[in-house]
Length: 291
Length: 243
Image (cartoon, rainbow over all chains, first blue to last red; front, side, top):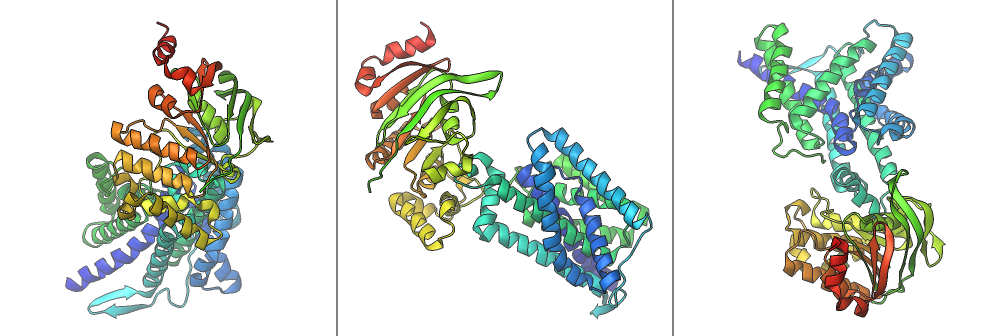
């Protein structure tokens, strides 16, 4: 029993780090820009296939792919911002939501055309290996993916809090006009922010692909997961997103270990509903859009 | 420190938030270098819109914004500081989740390529406003209204703008703090800066003004130097109220 509990805790923390990675990009974009990026999970899916193709065609390890995904998806996000978001940013939330939904459907269907609806998996030499921590057994792939997710979250934190550009992005999230008056090119920095958000989605996709099978249609599941983390954590805080991811990871693994599988999602979404009713701002104590 | 300030002119400005609803209907304003030019008028007459026009948030459908004769109409908001135009917006505009130092540092965004110069400019603000020194690491959102206003003024001054657009500087402040803010505006004027001040506090604004414009329904009404207005405040305000 003790070994199982320890395994569940470690598993939950590692998965939680990845879930935090899933929610991070969504949280940043929503927190600073107010754009509900429902296409977030489509980019997560693309991240999984990005690693899959690099592995299949060139034998590139997913760990390397995670690093490569950063600039590639950053560029992709920047292009999406410049070509799509700037057209809907000030047209009201409905148009923005519809545009992002359209983008999600487009990416998913392109995924079906290119990769079919069959599920794929990234199977490397360490996929099915594990090691022991005391009585607990831990999968190497989860340690690697969790570590990369932690590095991603840490890098985002450092960028947003310890660089002038990151602080300027946070300032835009708090008062866009006041930031512009200071000479800050808001569109330029929002291009960086959106690129960063999509880069987070792409890297998270690689990490998820290391652990779970993936298919174009399966991406919507991760959208719900990302929103779960964001709602739990409150909008736009890197630290709170991390905490929320860990909470979701722990609850999921505990529920998965000790109650029938069909109750796992019931428990998680009941928790979400309770938090929304009792504490609408999420786990944080302050309801506001800021990072 | 003496600033060589430019003249700011607004000529025949027609502007608003929608093409069908123009707030400014042909306004002419000239803000002289090194002077405080005050724009007064009843609510909804376009005073704040005038500052937003100069700051670049509102586009003129007719007329021009000129700085020493250079037309600024096509210049985006973030490039106007490069021309020396700083704005102190109405209400709270300090970034609440950033510290005082981070707020002030962002005021020097245009200096970011020269980190040493940026640091010096930030530290100069803590010398100028020593009471902010002990608040350096406090989040701006936790400060009092007066302290936040000081942060906003310091943030505006880091890049040393020569033209200051000041929108209702005393709103939400205690009378004592408001007096300090007006005193600071006089000091900024004495440094040679061009100041365009929009205010509801008629008495305080006229007291520090060099020249006064009164707008009514988005148009120029009356104008003159301070002495022309000082003795006749009551009739001005009664005129706005229509009594």
